[in-house]
Image (cartoon, rainbow, N blue to C red):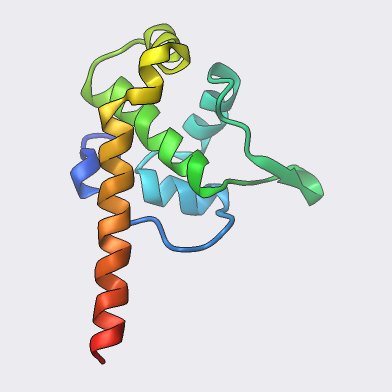
Length: 118
């Protein structure tokens, strides 16, 4: 079930600064060992490592992981193809990343609106 769901079903990214590998795994529906493997394959993915080599991902890392996931699982790219796509000039204008950012901002704004209503 984890890898079959698409980005529309992914939960919103909470408004915190750092995420553990377990949290990112749940947010992106990708198992932790896959995340560690992707770190080796995608130079854009560089979580901060702290005490005991623990990984801490930032919001842009989570968005990048969702984009990698979309390229591999939904758009059918190979690892090499996805890496090339992300490093190309097109990646700057990639609509999937833009859509994810817009969706996330919208959810956060709706939460703020709901808080203000109460």
